[in-house]
Image 1 (cartoon, rainbow, N blue to C red):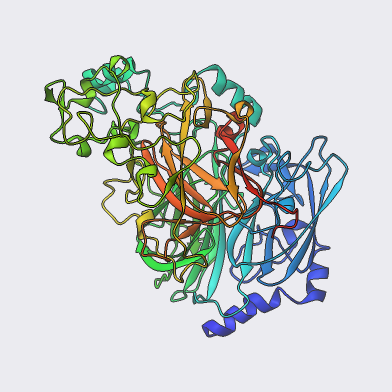
Image 2 (image 1 turned 90 degrees about the vertical axis):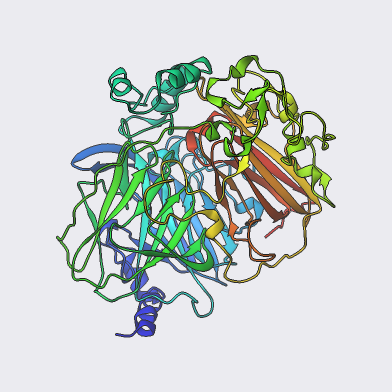
Length: 620
């Protein structure tokens, strides 16, 4: 069967009204799915969709645990929609607590965005709330709870929106690949334990045996890091010690399998719905061509591996030609475990599962002190020896004068909370003899509210969008980086930004405190404010030693590395430790959540609101 006919079967069959009505009467496990998806993803479509939130049980690798489900399944049903339609989703809450659904990455009216306390009151127990909005885009997205920690309990599901016209991406078959993490511990217990003890779930710390074996850091390096109360092995707060890593709701031993016929172009739609874990994805011995990021088409990029932050989506094309099985690996960023599935010509096949790779260690660059940028600098009259510096006692250093302050951009005004550029002097890059560096110098970020929630302020943050992510620097094959992404078509708003805003990502890993600009959400007195249709450049600076996938509701923003007009449009971007990311966006009226998509970080306070005015209540 040729590509066009296969795609017409895939898309056309989903729109047969009578068949869908019959399909909806079947139990979730028996409901049909589009060609190329496994029966573990029941599919709902059409203009009217009913969703029911309730308690269920999920068995992972032979062990049962409690979950919060949508229509009784984890993940929830695949919602298959069409660009240009209007959809009406009736969500009924059968829990004994409030719930909600946020349509992640979908451009909706502000009052349909699904964030309790920001865009609507939430859905009370026993009540039904009706979401209704036009579908203005196509691509791969997802939906999830924005109430408490329900997302960590299984309250999430995928969305695929078919384009109104021809799809520029040719494929014969597709699989939706939902990556997630799951724990038998209740998420509130996990959160409480992290507040009580820093690194409580990190079972991969450095050991004395490792020291004598010459592994990891030297004794001097360990002592230096200990003085700063920093642990270079603390890559992910919640780890494989208490998490199972799932693919389409299945554990590694369950071995979810997606089928293909050798020679087919297979589209894999990856969605990271994990509450806390960033994944490194690869299919050993099989190349992947990235064709879309966060639902938006990009120029094809062939890679061997990619890192996918929480809430991001990537579409890739594979074309296996051999009549054999391939292992699909979603390895935890801290190498504490992996999700595993199989792609095969026939059910029951499997392929070798690669071992976990060596866990990464954080570096001085992750602390916001880029050694490459320090070459030739003089520290206290001698060479820069970052590992041996007493960071707590050092007087301040101005990084704004080194080009890290967005307010210094020609033609752009400083945004609220931003410091004006300082004159270059003895503390500038050209004359730094005798200068010392502080890890908590308020001059480096005047907008930060100093307190126990700010463990460090990165003195020399750098753009790391050309880097593959922690632990992937020397894997020996090509790894996707953000700078590889170029939009397939130009954006709709090509105006340059007229204002710049710098937002610092702050935290205290030992106390598990997280926020923006030194404030958790409960301490903020006002949102970040914008005017309707304003074009703004936002720079996120990560002052912590942990990566943060940051999501802005109701918008796509364009990363700034690409040719004018072709910046990849994303709704979520991962800011590496000690790194910074700049993006431009056009403000759409409403109150929009802005937060880290590591659920426990958001729950601890890394949440804010982008307030865009004037707002007439009818934004779309």
